[in-house]
Image 1 (cartoon, rainbow over the protein chains, first blue to last red):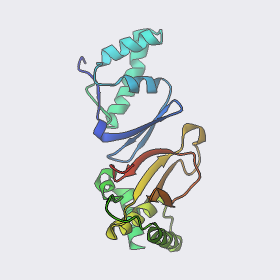
Image 2 (image 1 turned 45 degrees about the vertical axis):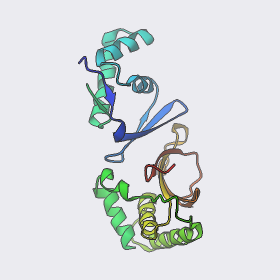
Image 3 (image 1 turned 180 degrees about the vertical axis):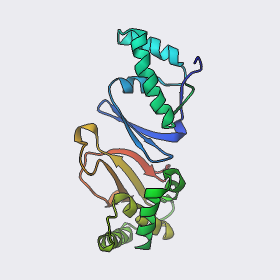
Image 4 (image 1 turned 120 degrees about the horizontal axis):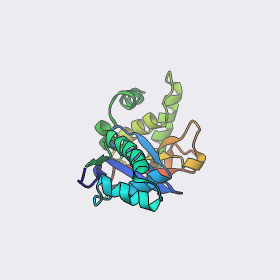
Length: 89
Length: 123
């Protein structure tokens, strides 16, 4: 849980436009659209932050309890992991 | 027509990672041959219109790319998505073939977000 979360950069191609990040996963050719807080989380996954550090930072940034933030973050990270886009969580 | 049929099967049943490396062709020393590529694109479109079922943009782009690769004609296969503001229709995802930086197959009006151009080192 303390290991930094990293993007599997060789596994996808991404483009950012108008506040949205569109990610194309290169193994199956699936497309993912990230908007809102998902974009904020995605940008914070840079290989320097663990899950807990990510939650703490987002909780402070959005002025929300960590318990509330962690549920959303964990759900999103699980989706990214299932899609093969990240490692480390 | 056979290429289109094979492309349709690949798109439907085989992982993208298994075949995307076989799309596009980059050769800085080769002449562009855009006119020849366009003629082949029209051939693919006519074949797609005659085949039973529907050959969407990606199988057509794949079939054309294989024909262009066989003839060593440099080209790119672009995979695109609609931006969120324009999404929700039948063509939210699209594939085009470019030759000499011109769209020769799949020229649908934008807006488009370019996700990938194959081969991966072509931009």
